[in-house]
Amino acid sequence: MQSAIFGLLGVALGALLTGVREWWFLSRKTRKDAEYLSIQVSCELERYMAKCAEVVGDDGLCEGQTDEDGYHAIQVQTPKFDPMSLDVEWKSLPGDLMYEILDFPYRAEIANQAINAVFEYEAGPPEYWEGFEERQLQYVTLGLAASQLAKKLRKHVDMAARSVGDWDPVRYMEEKKSTIEARRAKRAIREHDL
Image (cartoon, rainbow, N blue to C red; front, side, top):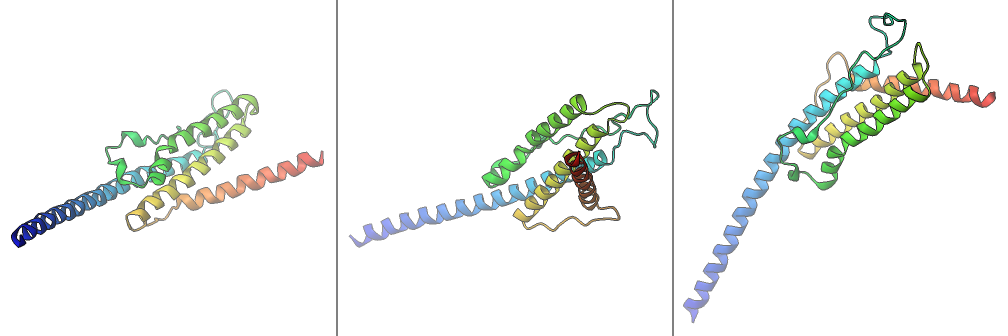
């Protein structure tokens, strides 16, 4: 009887040790997948953020000049962020963080729809300033959101923040956002007083 009990305990202990070992290897793989994903996606988000900063600086002039017809025209291409093109293990992230990343292209689509509406229905030639201002504000918002998302990813895997060089696109966009919002607030007061 005792040998049967010891045999049963041995089988149970073996199964438990096998389960613990598999759990340990799986958690280690998940951690490595999350680190790789965080590095790759945060780098892509930071590239996107830098391109947003370029859009924010676009006032429709090429080296201070209008086009040959005297109009302001978009000089900086709209940036793209396509997380599904990245070969990473998305399931290694918590659901809310994964959703925030995978939903980001939709946020950009909504922003572009708002920009297109202003260019089509409000902005007038030759400056189209209303359209450029909306484009700048939408891409400030997207660029700052991309920066925050990259920070969340790095924090998720305890990765150090990227060092900022001589030019800080986040600070540039924050200043630009403040300028645009102040300009809009002044216009709203003027329009209200009319």
